Image 1 (cartoon, helix red, strand yellow):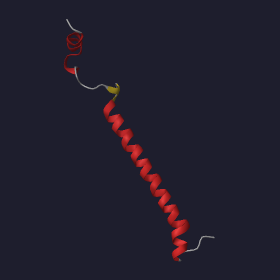
Image 2 (spheres, rainbow, N blue to C red; image 1 turned 90 degrees about the vertical axis):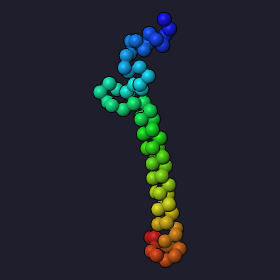
Image 3 (cartoon, rainbow, N blue to C red; image 1 turned 180 degrees about the vertical axis):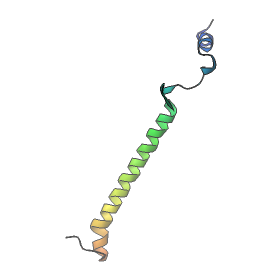
Image 4 (tube, rainbow, N blue to C red; image 1 turned 30 degrees about the vertical axis):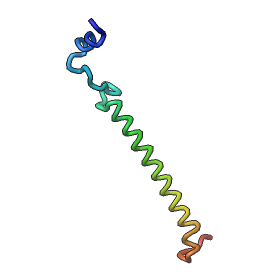
Length: 70
């Protein structure tokens, strides 16, 4: 009997399904990886927005006379 057949008999209905990260947490490894990708992209968007706002406040606003930076 091959290894895959033995594994299929052992696991039963769970054969071929992705396992959870923790037994008590219903999140699969693929879902966790997707969350990390999404949160990383969100962090870079936040960093870019922060830089754009800082440049606007520090340089663009005073050049156009919208306000003065003391």
